Length: 121
Image (cartoon, rainbow, N blue to C red; front, side):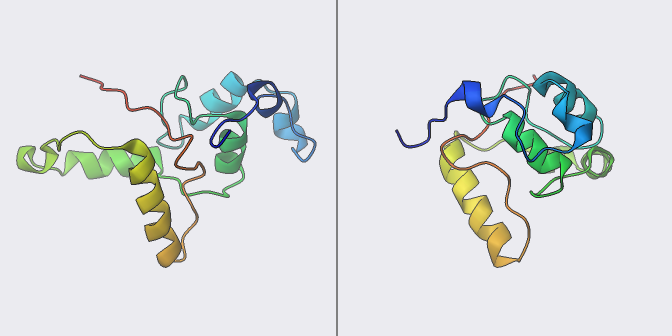
């Protein structure tokens, strides 16, 4: 089916992996990367071993965690106003098109396996 992937294959170590990640579990790779980059929550649908390896190998668009925190500090309350409900798949599709038009790396996941939105409040 469109957008579905066999989880058993996707979460196993891949043959093209380097020695640093080959023996690590998905959770260990996530824990290593979450301190460097802003990532979706671990339990999100789009956070797969394949996506984490793309982040690790700098094959997709990433936002350094310190850079994001610095950006958020300078936001005013008016700038943090929430918008209505958005379709995550459509948002991912539009962002990937925007990144491609600017000759930047893609997000690393498609519109069918976008991470779930989790409210932190």
